[in-house]
Length: 372
Image (cartoon, rainbow, N blue to C red):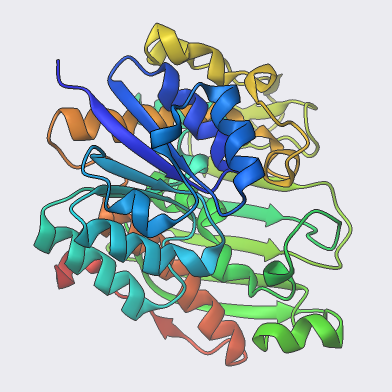
C-alpha cells in the first residue's frame, strides 16, 4: 500500500505528533522543522530523524520534493500564511486549531485547497477524545433519543507561566473550536446566527493587545434547519478554575454531562433520578496496532508542555487525528474534518467574537458548504 512522507513544523507540542507519524505503518519518511537549531537537533536524535529531513526554515521544508504533506503546529498567527504556502506548494496540509482568525482567511484556505486539489484538515482534538467518540456512538445508536439542548465549556486560565506573549489578551472565541466542534458535530448542522456577551474584565495590559476586554464570553447559537439551541462558554484569563474543555448533551431518552473536575467521572442520566458515573473507555482498538499506545497519557513525551497540561490530556485524540490525515491521503479522499467543515466550525467562533465586540448584536454565520 502507498506510504506518505510528512513534515511537522513546530516542535513544542508538535513533537508529540511527529512521534506518532514515525510509528504509523502508512508513513515512510518524517521531516521536522523548528527555528531553534538546538531544539531541532535534540528532537531529531530522539525521534531518529535523519539530518537531511531536519529544517530550521519552513520554506525549505515546504519545497522539499520528497514530502507529500505538512502538519502545522505553530503559533496561531502563523496558521493561515503557512497553510496557504503548503497548499500552493502542492502539499496535503493539516493544521492545529484554529484554522485562521478571519472569515476571509477561511475562504482563502478552502478556495486554495480546492484549486490545488490537496487535502486540508484542521486537527481538532475534541472530535476524537474518548469521551466524544463514546457520546457520538450513543447518538448514532439512537440511545440519546431526540437531542434537545447542547452546551460546551472551555474554561482555561492562560495567565500562568508557559504561554507565549502572543496569547496574552487573545480574544476567547477566536480560539473557540475545542468547545464548538463537539456541540456542532452532534447537532449535525452549522450555526445560522450567534449572539455573544462578554462578562468581567481582564487587565488593561491584556485588553490592549487585541482590543478584547472580557474575562469570560457566553455565546448562544441558532442552528440551521434545527430546533436545537447550542450554548458555549469561553475564557482564557483571570478566571480561577481547573481547565474544563468539555460538552454536555441532553436528549429525551438519555443525557450526558462531562465530569466537573478531571478524573471525577462523567455522568449518564437515564431518568430524573437515574444516573451512572463512568469513565469513558479507551479507543486504542480503533487504531493500527503500531500507534495504539498513543491514546494513553503515559505516551506523551513532554507531559509538562502547557498544551497537554491545560488540555486535560486531549482525551487520547492525537493518534486518531494523525491516522485520519494519513488514511485520507492514502485513500485519496477528504478527511472527516475537511476544509469546509473546518471553516464552518472556526467561523462560528469568529462570528461569536464579533458579536461580543458589538455588545451581543446578532451576527449571521456563513455556511461554507453553500459558498463552495
